[in-house]
Length: 95
Image (cartoon, rainbow, N blue to C red; front, side, top):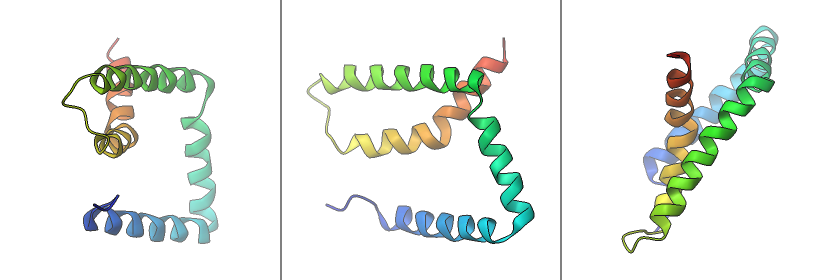
């Protein structure tokens, strides 16, 4: 069984092409760097760490169950990087 499906490979290739496009243009590159700096700010790093520990804890609980298979790790990582961080941030801003 392959690690990535064809759809995931296509998304990865298009994402890399978009990243290369952003790095070629100076204005976009500066804006992208500013977004990265803000995303990694000290207060947000605490939030990302808490969310990461939560997902890791839930994953460890399910790892102990007999229904667990290691193929789920890829899906958990993809969910965490795409949706999980946004859900956690949205949950924090509600308070």
